[in-house]
Image 1 (cartoon, one colour):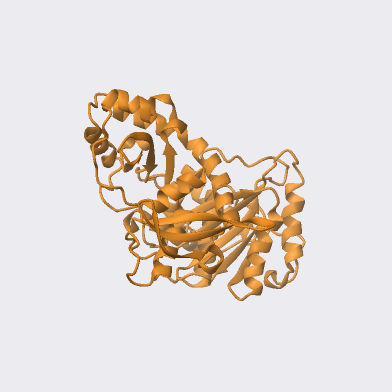
Image 2 (cartoon, helix red, strand yellow):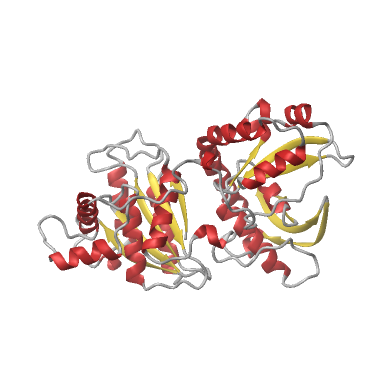
Length: 416
């Protein structure tokens, strides 16, 4: 399973995105949780009502400039649990993330080959207090790993690349379904990786011979075309972004760039510390490459035609992010690394996105990342069940039987 979190200034936009999918027959609204005042069947509520409740909650704290909490949970290709189980998965995720008592809407989408749900909520609680996003992605990752076990889902680490995408290979002009191959690469990079510039987006695409090219449009914002590229040369016709699945347009890429800046900013100090530790005692480019390969970090060199190294980037496969050396500090810039390791960059195998090789991850990436979470204490399980009952509209005034509560805790309850 892959969990992706996005934020926004107004929850109405996220709600309408999902509701428009429903109107097109590409999604279904599964539930509205903690929607006070909605007395009809939640599936019959209008989209204006769905958005208004979230906006009303967000208005309790105007200092929260980006109150929208929008997450998608994507399962592996071939995994098709029933809608009620998907809803249980969504509820457990929201409880684990601290949103169990928040109003939220759950949607199942049918617009891709793999099963996925979207959840829209807000970061302001009933008292107007902001729900913190500190270490949110790390928390989500640990919760995702636990839910995979609880629900018997395919583990994301074992898939090794975007769930639902075919095994990626560099795109070759004139071989196979070119448009499908380009689409697979684009959506894998766009949906899975964090980048903070168009240049970094193209660096990731370039690993698979794909390039995004901005095309001027008279009187309009530039369009985006994806083409096959062999080194510096474009090959064949390009494909308009609007013609590809999920329409990875310039607006979409720019939104990912903006969200990537924040996510990478939060992760940069950790990444810098890890790389500085790996540099200790290293005397050659090859040695550095070997060390980083063991912790799932790839080096992407930027060289001129005469082989001169003028820049370097690092792809963190664990956190799915690309950093330029200069983003991490002067000590990790191309100039500093050349001074330490030599002017001539030694040829190393080009990295593959989520290649599946050397999947062991150093503990330096976070001591909690690979640790098995302990069993929840009875009081914690009881709290989880109370949150779940509250989420599905069965509060303290309704009492489930002892047998049903035990069943819910045993079968679905996450160990947080």
